[in-house]
Length: 317
Image (cartoon, rainbow, N blue to C red; front, side, top):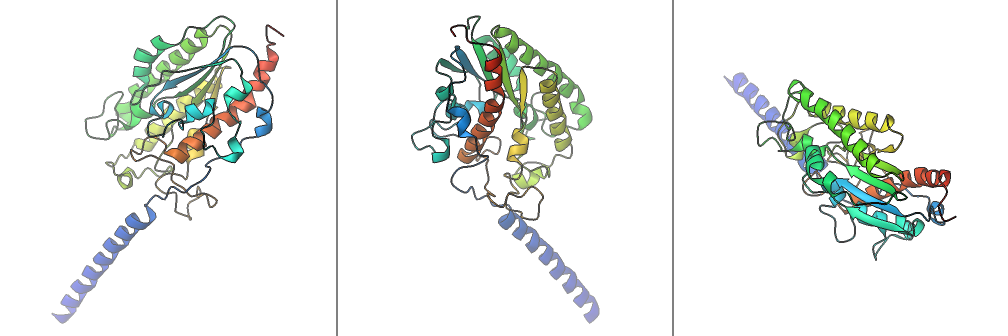
């Protein structure tokens, strides 16, 4: 009897130990310090010291809440900071914006928070600004993330709100996204007869590629990462097959700044800045995330656009 009771006690203590270690893991390693100061990569400010073109240029924002700037404080969304610096800008980014290098820049942002890729087609394409033949378009776009994450497992999965779907369920919806995205990109390109460059972001992952949605406060989703990867493969292929479209690797930039950002044993750990870059709702960036995203877009733009403008001389030059 004594041995049996001792065995039960050992089992009970072991179970309590496992429970305690699990709680310790959740409450210590999954807390999310944001950090402070600049976030993300350095941008070569020397590329912003001379005018890129005197042509009329339109900066157009399309897509979901990331481009709409949900959760950002005034003037500090990535779109806003592409255009001009906020009053309290970091020293390394003063003067590093599109208004500095594009003196005839017009700005239109028709993105909509909460929108899916289908809603981009239904509501945003009709709101593209009128442009003259000589106007060049710079388009920034984030789309597809809401197709995947909505409705957070609270409703049965369907196209446009597929959270919780099996890969087999999602296969036709993924195929539809491929066709839809191609149509969006081609429609936008046709809208700018004077030429354009479309900077298309892929979809980031707040679980840092681990897929443990339960630790993000959401229901388990066994096929979530596979569906997410399929969407990103479509986005990458759409950019690869179109000379005017350029992939912006938002997923890669944010990897290691999600719910596992403090886990130093992970291969994605950033010892120089393990800050968390997501807003309270998990699906949008926080202030530092928007700073990092602005830098990522400007890095890609400064790599692509000066060469593009140089290849087509200004009409007035």
